[in-house]
Image (cartoon, rainbow, N blue to C red; front, top):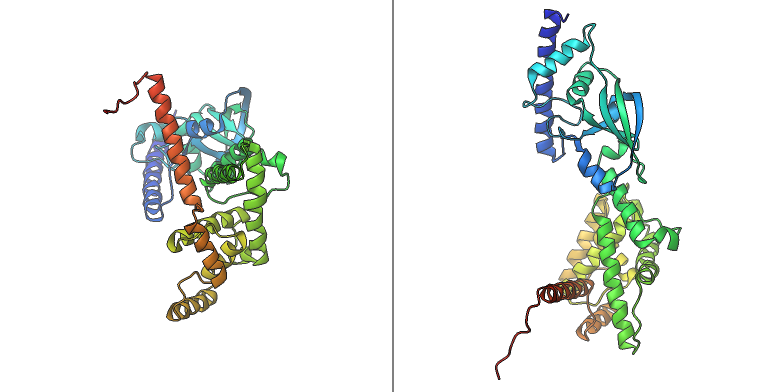
Length: 367
């Protein structure tokens, strides 16, 4: 029998928890941080998770439960109940927990070291509101090749881990270049690398065609060529300039991506052929820094550079600047232009395939 005291305390605890959830959501709106639980379906789909193994009943740490199958928007990431959660149900479970009655085990999916609620979101919320550390649960393990931990869900590391595996599966760089050190600190970057490899493949095929060869690079040849002649030289140049020292917490791959974007901006602004790795890194080093003193000095140098009428990137010699401009005027493509051509070719192929599939007649031209 649940006492009236337990019922009153449970309703008060619910109200406090809802208020805390509202504060957390408000802070999330201000900072841009996501405050809802993770969706099991989203994570499992990204992992291509399939096989399930029943593991029986376990005592599970509450802090390792990070998401839910269906109710992930009803609670915050610390399982605080939002206003739409049924107060009577929540309070009844709270009162049961604090009486001799208790409540039955919840039902969880486990992926790596983290858990998602299959059934029992309210019970998890109540247990956390009462400062419990563990909860009894029926656990079903979902097998995956990506070892997820609770730390991965503090930021977006779980997405980055999945993207890294997808990139390595697609490129086989771990086999082709076992000592590669390609790791990003932000999601969405690995797809950009795949685009870079495709552009590099296209440009190398153009080089072969101009040389009179009918050969075209196979995919894994393009991967190796991109890594050896594009990625690695940029990394070696950034180490020569000790650039990573100015960007704590960032990786070689992070800086490679920034330098690549910087190189494209210069090419577009000044009408230049793609900069060499050394030139891309040296001009990047001149333009960017994380220290106030270095930024101030570089700002003064840039101002003097403009006063003297030097219409070229800071850190680039006049000879190199003129060479890059001449190559561009002679028809050498920037990476952005090569990527645009690839997209146009892909669209044309798609349109042609659609027309053939629908037996569209060729357009007639009047004589």
